Length: 123
Image 1 (cartoon, rainbow, N blue to C red):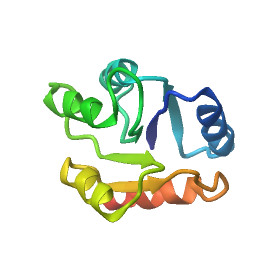
Image 2: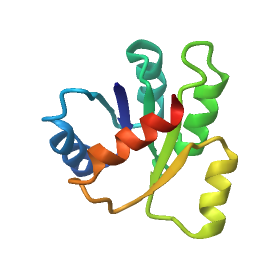
Image 3: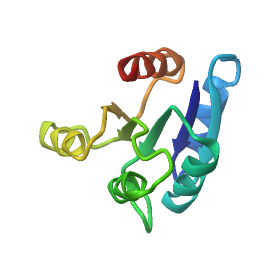
């Protein structure tokens, strides 16, 4: 499964990279912002995107909208990853088309299984 992880924080991308490095069934690409995520979506063609909500410039919701409006891989499942997990915020993110919302901080050891669960929902 091909996963695109998008986060503007270098440390969090490094944690995700480390958490998934031994997972032979997960092919990971990392992006640091919305424009890079849009470009990688078109070239890497991920099966799932984990997308940070709060990023400078093009935030997560705007990035999701751009991906949905694109011609290539527009229907890719997207899950948001955020520290803002109040009921109203989660409902809003789901209304934008997110398949799930993962709370930050997340457990790096549990992340591979969570990704497999999300991937299983899309099939």
